[in-house]
Length: 123
Image (cartoon, rainbow, N blue to C red; front, side):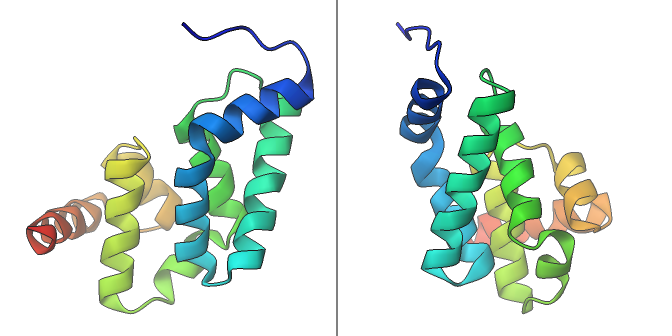
């Protein structure tokens, strides 16, 4: 059973415990810079704990995605990295393929294709 956290510091700690590892993985993949990734995760968790204590991973991922370069970061990547990033956004973060398309400025059909290709590539 999850306990209620009433302070921003307590909320940040809880968010970090629940989502920190996944957010750091995404940020590192997007920025290719571990220090920048850690700073982005800290900023996003701090912001979420101060303003949205009940934030869920998908909301944190949206904010982190923008903090780490957003759609421009996706379009500049080689095809394999773009596929892996789209797959992560859809499968690991809980975002729908439509939301991933919106975030990345890709067509929904292209996102669905990248997810399908990524799943085949995984196996």
